[in-house]
Length: 443
Image (spheres, rainbow, N blue to C red):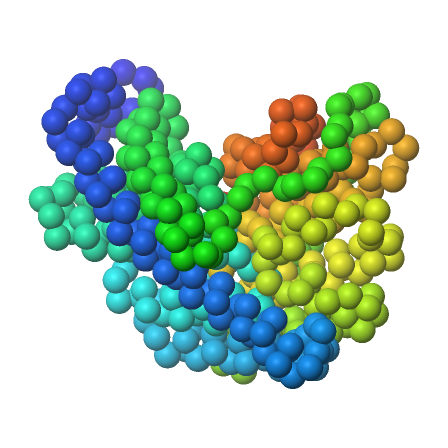
């Protein structure tokens, strides 16, 4: 027995024995069965958000005779979003769910908290907050799976219920990433398990997310709602050279610093709105709207570059790298970054897709550096930004490589190096945070 071990602690179960047991086989079957309805609910949630987003940001402005949302319209809509989310946080149980500035949460959401999670997420996502849907989907999927498991014989085992809840989260999150692999790896890193026990968690997550993604793909084809794709089209073909490798460290450090500043803004915002959620979140919504208004007035581009998560706008950003001037990219990074930081602290959603978008924007901004290719710059920026925010390096690497599509395999070295440099930089910057600052940390 190793020194310091507690003799009263039971040894971990033998993985091979567990995998051969009928109980674990039943758990895998339950994970698949529960993953299907969870994916159906997640699809309905995303479908509702998509329809309402299109109406608020496309149909209604066109009905008013605008080619794109007016500057004042952005301020009003985001202010209303802040008011709605503030009311949900103040009135409903669970305070609207996890604050995205505090990172990705792997805890189980209680059933009584789910209505507040859904309403706060719909208000945030539909009305333009700079957050993604993955945080609420993790809470929704895990909470529904937990409730379902408690009503079966699996409820007799706390470990089985926890595994089913993680599987439900994976099934739900696969619908937004459009890929069960990313969902499984993400849940695995959030749970934070290590060693051989990882396999026992990974298998039910893979079953649930795989079936959920298959169902979502079929529903998307039937309904006409676009199924998310983890491939950015029309990336310039590229091969790595020494110039790309030499720029990894400085670009990744620069990106990590920028993301750390954004994250600190989110933590300070969360601290400021905690005591007075209705007026404070409304004020934050107005500020995010002002960021979008300033961008559209200054850059003469649509405010949709700044509002929302950036998931849908990513392809247009990197698909025409020569169509963005340096000043426009600087404005985009500054104003979307400010809106992102404010949204992380006050609204409800996930931190992933805005980080990916901002990382891609930084990559385009630095791409003209001598010896650095456009695709390599985008890859470095996305990997560094996502890792610095999530603190989940494996998930970030897998996500970015899949986003790069056919160019992903050629960019794996810079993606991996960038993720490592960004993580080390972000952790080092955490150590320099003032002692009285909020202690939340991504991931």
